Length: 81
Image 1 (cartoon, rainbow, N blue to C red):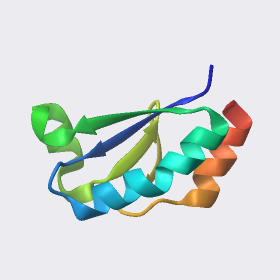
Image 2: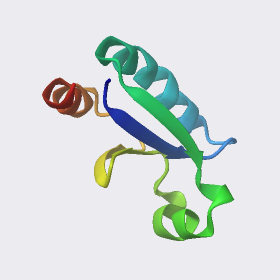
Image 3: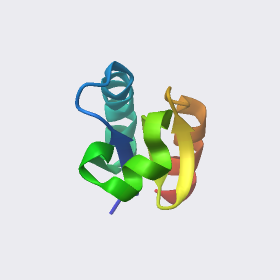
Image 4: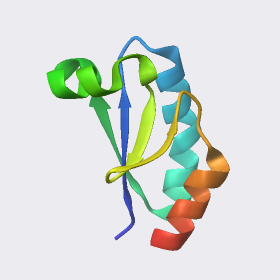
């Protein structure tokens, strides 16, 4: 089973959509599962991340925010696949 990543975002956020689209082929290549979480549906997440979204997490590790850091995500997945 591959790694699990969590993409925190908002439904109306174009950066969130861009990150999800860019992340999809990388996640597929490594067999990673990506869970999309709407920060506006959780008061604690909205308070913690506010305008920082999108945020890509691997557990509690923040891999990137605003824009996909492809090299960092690939390195993480290569070491945890």
